Image 1 (cartoon, chains in turn orange, cyan):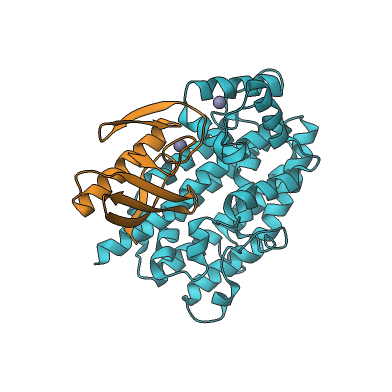
Image 2 (cartoon, chains in turn purple, orange):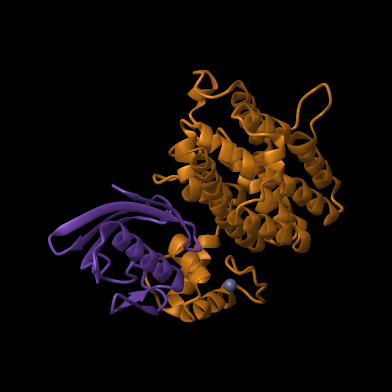
Length: 97
Length: 297
Ligand SMILES: [Zn+2]
Ligand SMILES: [Zn+2]
């Protein structure tokens, strides 16, 4: 699964740390386990709502404070959503946009 | 020196502090990574470069100004904290969430102030904390109610019962924050305890906009437009006026004593920790509001 964060962490794009986790069969790079937890939960929520079997690409815009406006893509389909978490990764908000 | 993330006491100077942080980053420790990403840099640097950057974050000729600017950066920037966004025109659920969680915050507050008193012989500090306890927790019979009492009345004005506010346990982030503040005030120097607690009062300081904040704690128009209950106006107005003197007097004391006791960096480290906890705690107010709203439907 690709994201617009090409330099670093799949969620926040930071280049510190080195934490790998398999997401949907792809080994993805994150800056830490919390970013990986958030990303993994986010993918699960998107799949639950859309019923998709896979996600090809996720665009994430924002930060931890204001939350992240996102668009997930699966082939021709797109799903827009917003989410925000506590700093330990627990979700505060996840909503369809 | 003290680590702003794990609060570890570190012998030496910025080289040693930066060494410790660099090691923790190498171990992919999420808390240290979060701190570096949020306050220093999101791009990996060399060890030597990091030392310079860490030093630059702490260096200041004016501690009071440094605290105010870091606080603005954290909560009042162009992407302000979401609780502040909600407070511009607060609805019933935001104010109820505020009342339920802040009750626990204030219960710890009075204990923190007392621990600060226990940890020092400076009478100036005793007087300051006692004055703070009276306005936040005790009030003065026949003259003015405590801030805590006004908070409970605000909750009641939106239909919460006293019993329910008292019986509802704090959410996990509130509890975690409370335990951190208790730990700092109990075990660290009084001036670090003061920095952990009283810097937070800047949140309701109406001069924040003059200092560069993008928004205020709330839009003052709600004090007169009838969009919130009279009890809410009483609660917010009291804080609005009281916290100006509280926070700024405290910052002057913190600057004076941290310089006298050579604890400036330690105070800054504790401040960083405290604002992280406060960030989560403000989110817990939002979460509590959402929980109460969902119960209703
Ligand atoms: Zn990350
Ligand atoms: Zn540390």
